Image 1 (cartoon, rainbow, N blue to C red):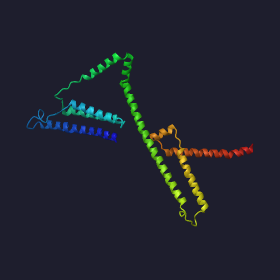
Image 2: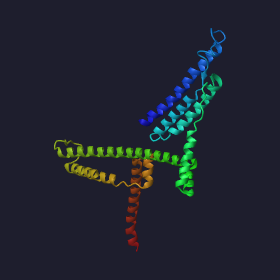
Image 3: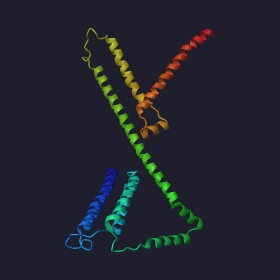
Image 4: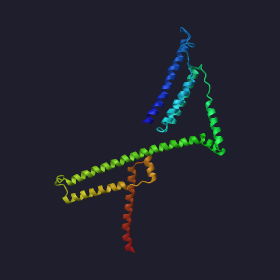
Length: 281
């Protein structure tokens, strides 16, 4: 739920930004450009005039966008890809707005010098307190060539864990449904066996002995069914396929039953052929 809400927030931010550029900047520029010829005052120098490209607001928008991405990265692993598409669209839309209906800002902002000073102080402290090889190792570890693959690996791990949880949840629901179905069958069979009036004899009914044999066979099958369920053993490949969602427990159980039937047929064939070989010998 948190990931869905953050994704909705990112997409709505894209839609509202494009709408504000079209309404505030583009329509305003059209009004100023084509109505300035017959209006009572100069629209380009006074109100409403052309919109300014405000650097500070755009930088704060990027910072807010990056904060939302870092917040929702754990819940939505594909959110950085969505954010890249969003930034590419905004880049072209803002470039078009700047070239057509914006003017440079009157207030000029200088680049901050605190960040290079901060990094220079950190490097000086590291060089004074640590050895040269350790400092080079730290620089190598924080380089983009190491950080980006580590982030991609973390994204893959998060996706795998989500798929694993989903597969285990589906397997748990399947097993719980099977156990509930078996419990219902056992309760109905036990009630029928205890109720003396449940069997109404007729001309087409079987004898009492045959009925008791059928009940005994059903109870034996019911007793063997949990053993079959518990005897279902999965190797690591089958567990991985179940967790990813490429297969389910029913298909694996059917494959194991077919393999068991083939093994039983092979054993019966060997048992039948063994007396013949003994007679020939």
